[in-house]
Length: 202
Image 1 (tube, rainbow, N blue to C red):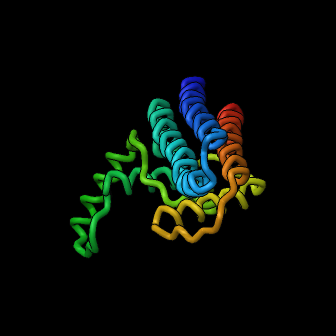
Image 2: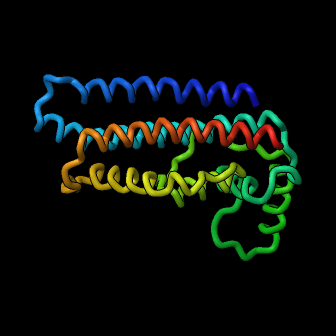
């Protein structure tokens, strides 16, 4: 567990350093109002990407952590077994033939006797409050508390609008951008503490 938490802390720390540099850039007294307005709007995609990348990386390393535990079929649980099945494409197509079903069951039994998750960063959905908690539930991790819901949804929504070319999101003040940066910093820290406490109780 310690290696996983140390890794997550390292992942958080370099992101915190970059977010600090963003704050410094926006605080530059020589920046013009129009520059600040444009940068503040587009910087939202970077702030969001810091969070999304952190989550994807955490899932990759949590998968490595689980694989190292060599969990058996009975220990892994249906959600994670479904992830293994999906990742390894164990079931394909619309199959009616009995012999093919028999072959699939045999292969499932063999592969799920010692199930392994892919040790790579997954493609994650836009991480609204609902989607991040769906993802955490699949991997058997504790959910993010309701306290973070409003700002998580706001950040995901603003990021989607800007990333898809809808630049009419209104003027986003430097103070609001700074607040969202602090929000992501706090959220990453909470995420690590939450996982750490969960694993200690396991």
